[in-house]
Length: 380
Image 1: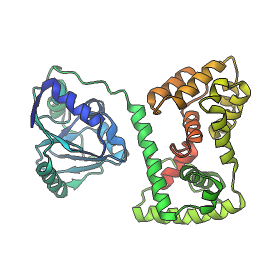
Image 2: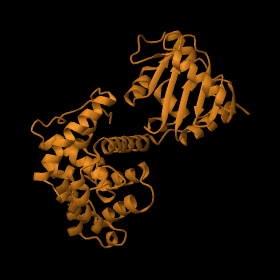
Image 3: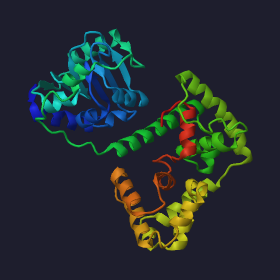
Image 4: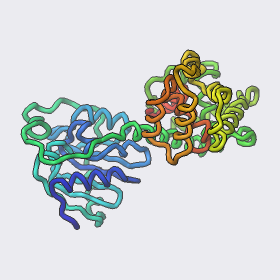
């Protein structure tokens, strides 16, 4: 066991949360603003692979509405236990039991003390027992009293410690959405066994899923996913039933319209943007790549502007695309590097380019596919 106080407590907790892999369980009767929560525990809790649970006291304590809304939108489980007073942060196989609520006031303005330990079995057992006793929370009944806010999450105390800035929001959201797509793809594969004709033709799993989404958005007689701006509320059984229904219809459609141009697009982009070829890229090859992107076909004015040498220099395009695709793991800093330097080449274009170049690693993400995900109950 290790005693943690003052600055080291927030530093170590944030470091653990930034590197969470499987589990982040929190117990705190008071939970502050989203901005403060992100500075204390980062944003990796958004990843679907992380089992994130929040145990609080929604009646006698409080959870700030912006934090609550963000947790709910990311399908984080929240439960309320009347008279909860413990403050616990379980991160994978490490735990902090502390006097500090999950508020900026507690971690940044007050002298708090906690015990960190890797011996967490009894703590987890207690947490799980309380979790079963608690009531699921889906809506907030009322706003906390101003006096309570001022004391627990306001300005009653001066700042004494610093929190590391939270700057990875875009990357955390991108990773979370990618994981959701891959989670759907895994479910789709387990339910359907895949379209073996598409497998034989060379489609990756993620490309097959994109074909399904495009079918539901454009080609299905009822276009059921078109305009799906909010996730449908579906149980696991309903999701599987919907997948089976539309999989069969998609397979019938594929027999008559296989759309193998999708495979051609991947080959075109991989040929032109391979690690050696990209350095010799000319305007003709750039145009070939751009013509492969759905989003720039939907908004051809952006394609015209992007291909105008007065708006983007060829060397800048080469530099940005090489940096994005060939310098290690794709992260938010690389995406920002591209958006900062290239005009009329936004996030949809970037996500598509990544998906076409790495069809077995990254999903093709655009408005069509997002609507498809929401149609099957995923919040993206």
